[in-house]
Image (cartoon, rainbow, N blue to C red; front, side, top):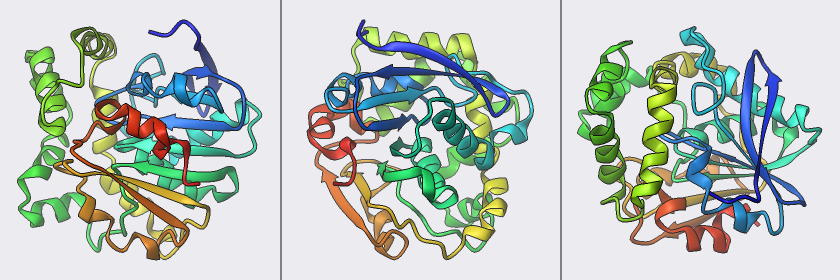
Length: 287
């Protein structure tokens, strides 16, 4: 790991939140997804830090950030609240916010819920989707799409935890390989960082993100019809098996100042599989 970034902690929104920080300049927040933590940006932070103050937090439930016991503590109101709370704690009025996977859901939600704090927003693999007509778990059941069934498997507390704990290394490796078309992008040392983080922190907090998808759907009702009006970037990965590029069709209606970029021959872990492409411009923000 780089010796030039620093680790910080802030008490906010009821949790002690851990983050990594590097560089000087306009602030940019990098928000990780599942199953990751701040480290999924480790190839991007030093490059972006040449022009930005880069801040990469562990979301609640992950890494060195607190892991509340209550299931409802992982809904979108809390997750966006943590992001805004971090900006407040660091005396940042507005920032570019970039999110991958679940982090993408958080940053798009933040751009809708707190637009005054978002300078620009970028989703890496994760599109800004319209609110479904029925709760997400019902929509997944009705879809018959086998690529989405893991989200239903995650719903029952304890069940998925036991599944992962039986063979943490093997299960994580299959997740990273299945969504990425192999694990060539991960060195063994990098993979060990992830294994040790989840061995230490457990899986309940991260899985609770999925267990709040219906709650988030209910809370999002007042946002229906709202647009992301700041400059926005959608980074699509050609070979992502779940967050497929075609899911971005029609996003311009929800984010009218939108630019799209397609990363070829890339699976789900874009900023690790294709770091040069990401660092060349995609993760810097929309414009």
